[in-house]
Length: 253
Image (cartoon, rainbow, N blue to C red; front, side, top):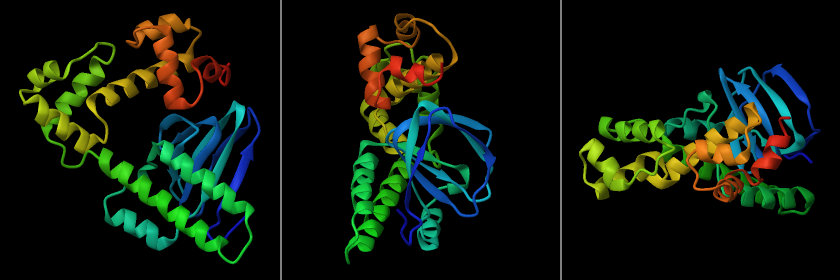
């Protein structure tokens, strides 16, 4: 299943440990199923279905595949695409990653095209890869912090420090001395998420870390992370990671 784009589908069995290695070209990886933990540039992160990430060339990284295995679409964009992204401020050397349902939709179409072999296949694959790159660039451009006003960074830091609390827009606006409407608009413009979605993501990421690192009851994790109930945690977690907290935990224990 290869194309001129070096586009291929890779399957990894459960528990596989990929020791530190490098690639001689910059690769994009879309997680189609399963999950894995990656260590790259002194950063440890867990990736699941719908994550699209970059592995810069000559950058050491290691991976630990989860207990359900992993399935990934991997491709090497043309140099012109890489230069275009760099020219628009996308720091590929920092190994950025994003998660979006749209990525998975495009990935599903790409897998379908990998099964095709007609005169239009290569063109279709190239078009879908370019769509993925464009969607990834938009997601990262929206979340970049270049040019973020100091007061907006203060608002973000306040959310990070009080993620377990139900912070209202008015309360946050009072903290940074800006009108709520202006705060909401600028936060979404610079960080790519509404204030509520940003706080929800912070809570889910903490819950994921607690699930990986210990055996606290789900009800206690829900309380610690500021969720209204165990059911609320499960519903929000599944929306973010495409699996329940219990299934997620099984991958690491």
